[in-house]
Image (tube, rainbow, N blue to C red; front, side, top):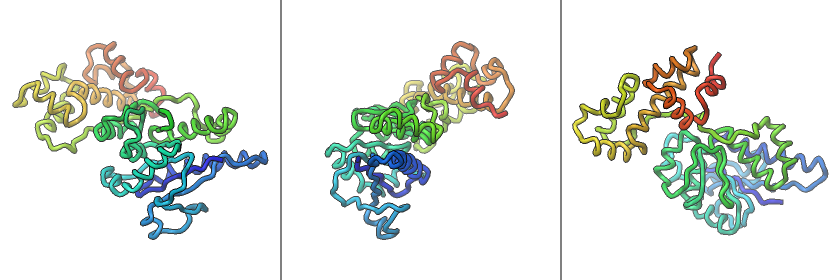
Amino acid sequence: MRKTALIVPYDYKLLSVAAILDVFETVNRLYAERGEEAPYQLHIYQQPEQMRAGRSAFHGYDIFSAEDKQQMDLVLIPAFSTEDMRQTLERNRVWIPWLQRQFEGGAETGSFCTGAFLFAASGLLNKRAATTHVDASDAFGRLYPEVVLQSEHTVTADGRAYTSGGSTSTFHLLLLLVQKHCGADTAIRIAKIFAIDMDRYKQSYFSTFRPDYTHNDELVKDVQKKIENAYREAETIEEIIKDIPASRRNIVRRFTQATGIPPIEYLQHVRIESAKRLLEGTNQSITEVIDNTGYSDPKSFRKTFRRIVGMAPQEYKEKFRVK
């Protein structure tokens, strides 16, 4: 029986915690029905301050303190629900030495969706492969450059460190852990019970490109707005930034530093995001979409679309078209 700790931090996402508990409780129930010992002994962990302000139990489970010294076999970090990740990480700093101690003691550790931010804050993901919610990947990459970010992946496994992407990717990491600990037959049974698509490996086609204006570089903000307003008509970045009072080299340097990507890549993302909206919400043909998003070369469009989204334009249209 694996001693399994699910931390319930400040600003946790209820859906994430519920999914984790539901899957492991179901695995334990399957074993109980066969008269076998449950493979997971579930423990809920919270900070002392949370425990004093709340209840002594969490959905039927006793709550253990972050000051507790017992060694776990498996540690799980749920997703966060927050508008200010830096503030949330600060509120949960007590978990960093706890996670480090557990990992050094041999615990497998997994994070789900944006829980990867806390996992990475511990330093335990440095030089390791990891993923997170695809829309949080840029912010994650800026905060933790030493982590080998694989933002297109649904799940990563690097030694005893596991991470999953956004939302339903949680189930894919849970399935991976169940398969490793309990075997393929149990994993397949869980996949059927929860209707998990076992063949989904990428999350890039669920991403949404959201321009980041949280930096303080007004010149870069001006360039961003020009790209977003002129992406259909302009053929080159030079055409878009010709009126900006700075050299191209300086613009590229400052733009990349502020947004995490160079202007040409930003332009591609804006165009592809526009193409996705047209494919989802209109009856336009692929040729019309190409014309209406600023591309003149169909081959270039299809190649860029597949690189950013993870599938061909026609596949995307068939999968996400709102009928």
